[in-house]
Length: 227
Image (cartoon, rainbow, N blue to C red):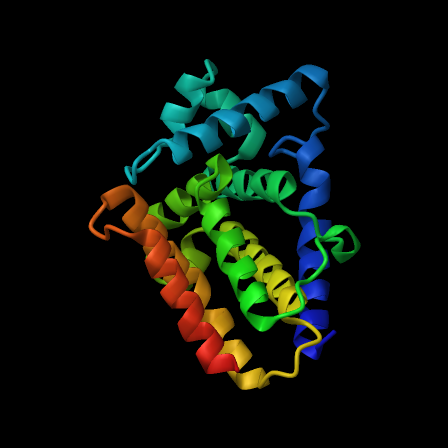
């Protein structure tokens, strides 16, 4: 494991410790009873569904409360403000879609091309899930610059940073054991999420007629750079 991977693990653990207690507490710090936990779960499920189905349109807290058939006061009691709501949404998505234990991950393929295909396919498939679409929609609805998110929604910014650490850990695992240039690996790791997300957007827009060819060409380019 690389030094960067170890740092990523520590940062993720610190973030996880910060939010772990919050899933059983209200925004005011009071312990949620069974009914409160059920309300929280319903609000998060509705929020994720609303974001996933938003089609890029902003999703308000009022809409989430209305669709969950609760008052704004209930949502505020659970999460406090938008920052609290969004960080809870990201945390819920994380719990649904990420297993941080590499011992349970699939066996790595023997060739570089197979591993690159696995990386691209896994991100491609995830972006088309309810959780992947919700996470993309949420990020799109926030300020474009990370520095602005950190000012307006500091806890949400930290939660997004933790999801980026998931990507780093998964990528490092999938390419681990291969004799590859670390600098080129870093460049590919930075490129792929944006490139695959761009192709995924084409899945909705439909300008590119053959996305399978586009994905294969992306894999060709990555392998050519790394090999």
